[in-house]
Image 1 (cartoon, each protein chain N blue to C red):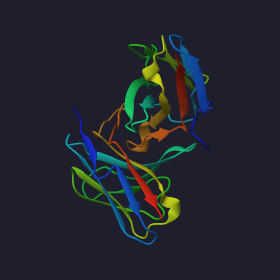
Image 2: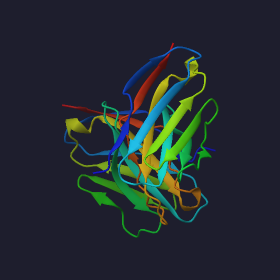
Image 3: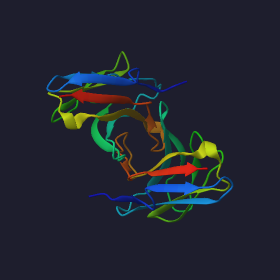
Image 4: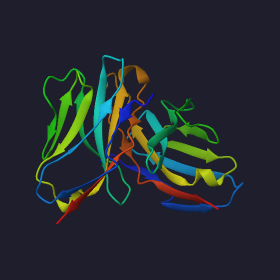
Length: 115
Length: 115
């Protein structure tokens, strides 16, 4: 079974802190994604990566950065956390595929609260 | 412009009844895939069913079926004989072939099954 793990289920940080959210997958997937989920807005893509050291901005990259130094690990960084970044963060991975079928496998999510 | 639209923020259904969750989409890419995910209160995203734009038949997976109406750009999820464990958030999503593995999600429908 595909396993996507996230470093924390719940996290509480203070405004201005630097926050690292870690995601690890064990299925040798090329693609990895970070989403944030807010009520009424669904999942919005922050950043994704299709290979080591490669990254592309999603729909809402402002205030975030990412790092992918190893294939299995994709980190989301909040350089200076703000209260409007309080949200559920979901990591996902998928294999590279030449077809439109490309199921994403999700981690359990990290609920981040910024005070 | 919103690419995936789920117009039902919440639904209540009696146990054992069938339920249809609506999803419409917008794309100019002739090759795309449509997905449905379930998110129970635990937070994990569970893949349910997939429909490719060139698939001739509607996808089915156990009690789940996808009512794909290409001309109307509609991809409704039908759950037959609903169970209490079906209570969850349901997300419709789409991947366009040209979009480098990105999946776009709708805002979700919260389904509650009454005993």
